[in-house]
Image (cartoon, rainbow, N blue to C red):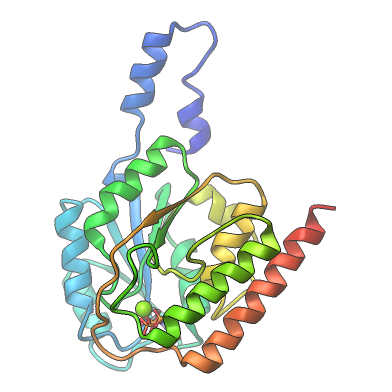
Length: 253
Ligand SMILES: Nc1nc2c(ncn2[C@@H]2O[C@H](COP(=O)(O)OP(=O)(O)OP(=O)(O)O)[C@@H](O)[C@H]2O)c(=O)[nH]1
Ligand SMILES: [Mg+2]
């Protein structure tokens, strides 16, 4: 069910009551949702993440993993019903771009496979998409993100401030891994970044006028080892933010 199909029910000739009841029955459900992630040696977390998604969505959401692991992550993911696409490890964004482009369901949710993101908030994300948002972005910093290393927390505040200045609009968490997108947003934009893909996935839609909501989320302790080097990764993300914001500003002229 595409957004166009949803809106096609609002024919002027129909009375409001019929239009409202049609709109309600056309709301997206978890059967319209794919939860996608890159997975790279996440043996410690994969079972919990998939089980949480299954429980919260009553087994209705599809799970897609783009996997570059040398451990048992892919095997465990398949055992728990996920669709697994194998890919040589080439970085976060290469995996996540493949993951977001794979599903044909109309609502795509990204997460990390490290048990840091609250799958129990998936119903809220779906509800916000049904309210009309094109992108719903989990804001980890709102509640303080105590589980995040202090250096990363500071960096994430600085990324959000930098992006806000360059975009001319306040955002609070540009590098979060948990977001819901209408699939047409993903398909309508060319993605260019790797480590900085998460920031790009917020900045380009926002600067092109899509309807974005940031929602506070809880952020947990990571299971297993981080795949991001804080300095090298942080510099790559900063470069992506500046590049993408400037490209989008120029695109407006
Ligand atoms: N397939 C694949 N997945 C990757 C690659 N790099 C990272 N990932 C996955 O992408 C997700 C995000 O990586 P994380 O290590 O959690 O990065 P992060 O969230 O910035 O760092 P933490 O704060 O430590 O969680 C995880 O599920 C990783 O397994 C890669 O090269 N290939
Ligand atoms: Mg993570």
